[in-house]
Image (cartoon, rainbow, N blue to C red; front, top):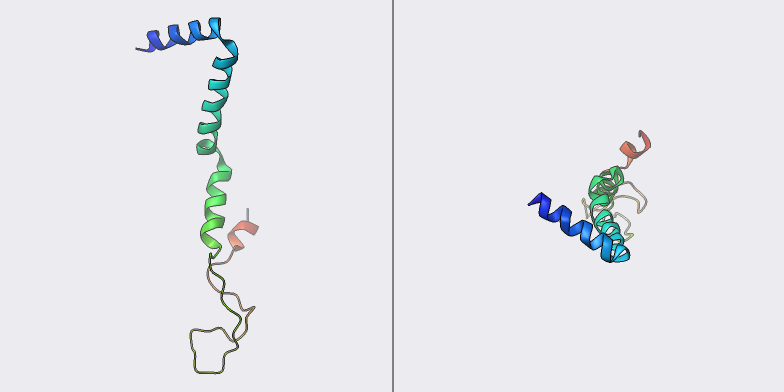
Length: 84
């Protein structure tokens, strides 16, 4: 099976080197994000960043789930990112 694939790639390179090179570049572009360490850290940043932001509401004492100030930190922080 590998011999057939190698023979097919050799004949493709001999006949159409531009197409063979473009297939190689496309394969590298598809595989490289999976091997990149930046993919891991961007996923961690995306998990720590909220998709919905709270509406700035002042706490009058009747809503315990509302923070007392709109700029009060909520949720997981990005302190791990500073320690890299």
